Amino acid sequence: MLAFTFPGQGSQRPGMGAAWVDHPSWELVEHASEVVDRDVAGLLLDADQATLTLTSNAQLATFVLSLVVLDAAERLGVVPAAAAGHSLGEYTALVATGAVDFDDGLRLVAERGAAMQDAADQAAGTMMAVLGLADDDVEAACLRAEGDVWVANFNAPGQVVIAGAPAALEVAAGIARSLGAKRAIAIPVGGAFHTPYMAPARERLRKALAAATFREPEPGVVANVDARLHTDPDEWPSLLSAQLCGPVRWRQSLETLYGAGARTFIELGPGGVLTGLAKRVLGGDAVARSIATPGELEQLVEVLARPPDSAAAATQSGERYAMTERLVVASSTGPFSPAPDCLPAVPSLPGTGRRGGRSVPPGGQQAGEPVEPARAPIRLRVGDLVGWAGAAEIRSAFAGTLEGVLVLPGERVVAGQPVAWLRADLDDGTRGQPPA
Image 1 (tube, rainbow, N blue to C red):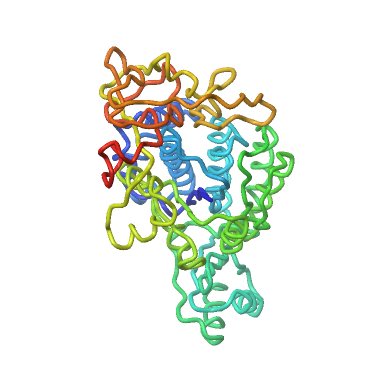
Image 2: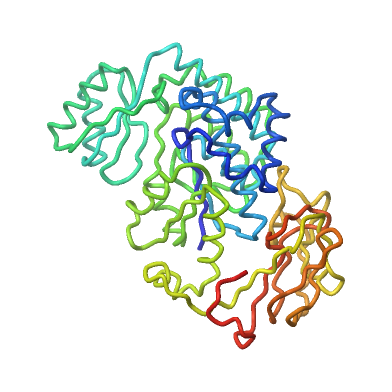
């Protein structure tokens, strides 16, 4: 089972959007700039570290880039069975699963970032990571400090983040060391997030949440506040409000996803912090990968195309294994038109065929939509026509059964972009080769 995770504030870095400028999914950046009336492209391409560290900039930039990566993954037909996000990433997860549309998500994140920035300006606070100490002992150290210091993140075994007034943090850190903590490391942030210091931002956030429309997420999203899987749209405004001043239970959220059957954890967005945490929490019982560039996305598709019983071994040894899945890619750039014989494999989506301003992958129908009857298998031979990119033909380089078309009619594709996937015959002369 595949789970998507989305990073929060702190994962941003200068120039993090450069790798995506020429990708079709970059169109989300231009749309985001129009919705929030800000130069989002400038944040992703030109902003320096000091500019990106500001909460109002960091959250918006991280949110938009994570959704660019998500959109690119969806274009390849990669769909999760569950999702979660760390702090800000929870908003990304809700957009990713259709609980909130892209425009509402942008407005929520912009307002949240601005409100938290104002709250941080009102109360000078910061954060610190306590390493090598049990959760209960870290909480005890905060209580014994008798000041404004609280647990902000339960990230992994032996990694807990505390936040509050600088003087109280130092006292709590000293107590934590006396209880056996290996280290206490200051985190260079401009506020004590996920603590009562963020209370001044709550009223502004609640107003923004009341103006947004929430739907049932598909699949469900694990909430930071209680580390439980939620699908009721009416619960999310209060969960997001509570998250503002309450701790992020990330370790517990990963354990919830694992308990639900997730064994592959894909972090979509800048950084790679959540991938490291997944490995620390779940060890060798799960596969964790970080996707921040188009090249890493291509590697992910290659790994997912391998048979489950050999994927881990292939990753460790570097050997190639016989793979049954094959990708058919566009030979040119232009609007996609499916071949008549392949029409039954095109995703059937009502209305505009879009969810939240992004393409919906195959099988992504929303609740209440009619389910189509099973179609007859579509067999392709080497050289059969799959469709057109503009006037250029797209033909299959493989023989097998067409499982699905990955783009919608009229959607612009670029040369080399996958447009369909099939389950290939292993006697077609491609045994042992990576997918095209």
